[in-house]
Image (cartoon, rainbow, N blue to C red; front, side, top):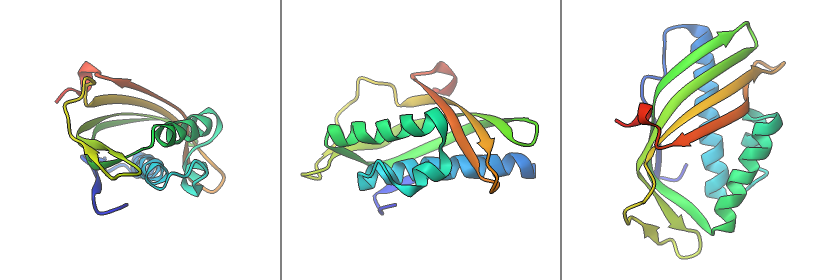
Amino acid sequence: MPSDVTDNYDDWKTGDAAKDAVLADTAARIDATNDAILRGDTGAPGLSFYYRDKALKDAAAWVQAYLDANLSFTGTTRYYAPEVTLSGDTTATVVYCSDESKGFNKNRKTGKVDKGPSKQSPYVAYTTHLRKNEEGVWQTTDLNSKRGARTCAA
C-alpha cells in the first residue's frame, strides 16, 4: 500500500485458531481489493486469490467503477466488530463494519483529494460468505454491504 493509505483492523483476533485464519484471509482480501483499486488493475492477482464465484466478478466490477470515475483514494479506513461463524471446516460467514470517515477520494490524473463533506454515511456493514479452497485459503464467495447501517455507527 502507498504510504498515504492505511487499513486498521480493530479486534481482528479472537484467540480461536480457525476463526483467526478466516479473519486473516478476510483482511488480506480487503487489502487485495484496495491494492487493485490503487493500481487500477481489475485483473490484479490478489483478487482471484481471495475471491471466487460471484464475489470475484463483483470485485472486478468494483475496481472498474473506480477506474471509470477516474478515482483512487487516500486516508485511513478502520475495520471493526468482526463476527465469524464457522459452518464445518470449509465454510464461514464474517460480518464486520468499516468507518471510512478518514478516507477520501483522489483524482487519478491530478492527484487532487476531495475532502469535502460527503452526503453518504462513512459507516458500512459487510456480510461475507467464504469457502476454504484446497490450498487452505479462505476465499470470499459472496459479499454484501450496507452503507449507513446503524449497527456500525460508532
